[in-house]
Length: 122
Image: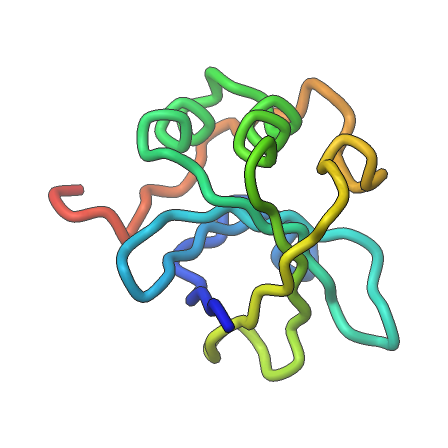
């Protein structure tokens, strides 16, 4: 089963709402909080390209567009059973991301995003 590791929280409100992660080969992912299940925080996760992630971090791309574009391929769900310091197991989803009901409303952009600590050279 594929796992990812949290690298950078981009937006938080009590708990992380949007964060970046990487898999064991260096692939980049974005995770977005959705409703909890069985008392566990749950996240929609999709792989993202470095250029699109930079645009999102710079406030040039909204979250819905980033997720919808990236989610045309594979997308996943994960829960924080052991917290963000432990690997997060990804559960592949078999419906379209648009049909999931988990995409956020259009217009959410980052303002003054924290620097990415997981990207070399920054």
